[in-house]
Length: 346
Image (tube, rainbow, N blue to C red):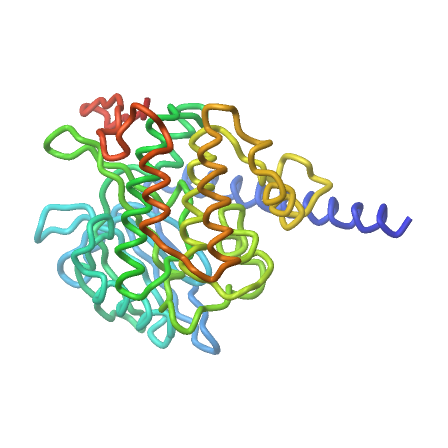
């Protein structure tokens, strides 16, 4: 009886959350319809500090960046797209309250990881109206959006190639003594370069932290730090280590194959932790025969965690042999319409 009541309470919370999100979406849609000029509006609260940022489209920040479009407000960070008038390039601007301790952590990460292929360049940091803004290079389309347009599936060969490239990026970041902690399809970006090749990069580093001492996951209900692309170990509240970034890439590869055993809409009677434990007990049971190699990678990584002996070279050695007849570093195949920017991965 107690279990039934608990499930009912969980369902009620889920229904209330869903309804509140629908209300917010409706209000946002109404706001866009009523105003021909969009205003980005957000309160940023850190401690007792509250700052308001209110920008009209075309507003120039720091005599350089023309505000274009609101990107989101997440955990007291306001993000928006802008156009850099100095370089004629698109940028992403993140706004923080001036005394937010995350600013220094974010800046330190980009300073130390400057030049890593697959990590955006920090263009500038400036203060304005009691807020601090970090400007980042911003190119490409989120992998999550591409998967959505592809009905959440791309070929096994391209899944393999994407995973290989992401492993190389996170290894480079780890060599600079940082973990990323936010790797998911929406934070992976895909760009067709001037040579008509598809490049893969990462875009979200708001949760990045030094490897040592191993950081704890943020407390509370942070949906990224405690989300479905995090490892079982991280969900259990253990300190975050480099292996957890690799596990996140494994889960991105699952998503590329349309396999998502952690989806909130499936097995709603189970908690995310229970879903992670079920997958961990038998990852092969969730994958078709052609993709069993993804489970091999997962179990190798978790075995290294248990042994306390992580070796990037061993992971890449297994990955290089995972798909016979396909080279991991070979080109990702895709369809691209330059006229409208539409991009699909085969």
